[in-house]
Amino acid sequence: MASSYITNINLAGSTTLDSDGNGTLNASSTPAVNKTKAGDYCFLASGTFGSGRTLTLQHKVGDAFVTIGSDTVLTAPGGCVFTSSQSEIQLVVSGGSGDSADNLYVAISPLEK
Image (cartoon, rainbow, N blue to C red; front, side, top):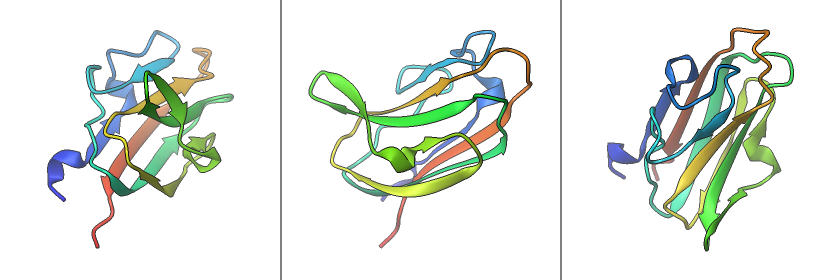
C-alpha cells in the first residue's frame, strides 16, 4: 500500500479541535485523517491522556460514521489492529475539559502483507 494511506497526527497542533481539545478529525480537517483503502490497519496512540480524554476511531458506513469496534476506543496510550472496507475514517476526540495539556500522538497505518 502507498504511504498516502498513512496518517500521523500530533493532536496538540490541531486547529480543528476546540479550546478544550474536543472535536472530530477527518479528511477535511486540520490536521487531516487520510482516506484509507480496504484492508488491515493499525491504530496507535501515545502521550499523555488528560483525565476523561477518549479517542474513538470511526468509519463511514452509508451516510453515518460508526465506531469500528470497542478496541478502537482508547482512554490511555495503546492501540489495536482493525479491518475496514471503508475509505473514510474519522477520529473523535472527546472528554477534554481544558484542565490538562494533553500531548497526544496518533498513527493510523496499513499493515503490510
